[in-house]
Length: 128
Image (cartoon, rainbow, N blue to C red; front, side, top):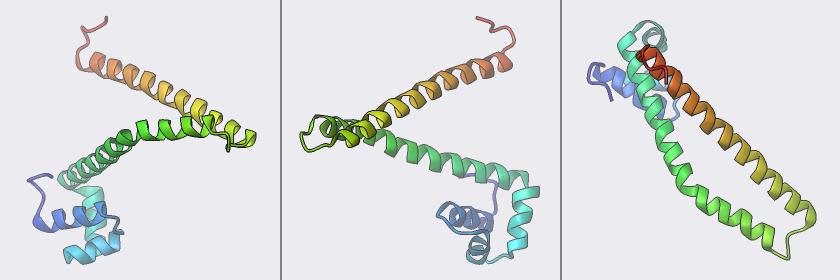
């Protein structure tokens, strides 16, 4: 994580990232909850470190979910092809496939557009 946070702040961040409440994180770091709230609102170094920890947690979770996509698609395909799947279940499977495919496609397009906007903001001469 960030080298600039204090050891107590690092303990607090770790506690928050493992699902602890602010009160639990404060207790673990041996500070008051008020101190944690102050760090979260007023301490830029702490806020940056906490945000970095959150981003890392999300990246890790996304990586794990991405690894399961193929297996999930295989299971949906098995359900569609199974003679034991009822018509109502098939409709739910097809709906899940189309809905999630549309969401993934939209997210991919939005991500590409956002990348382009950020590139343009960082380099105003990049117009193509």
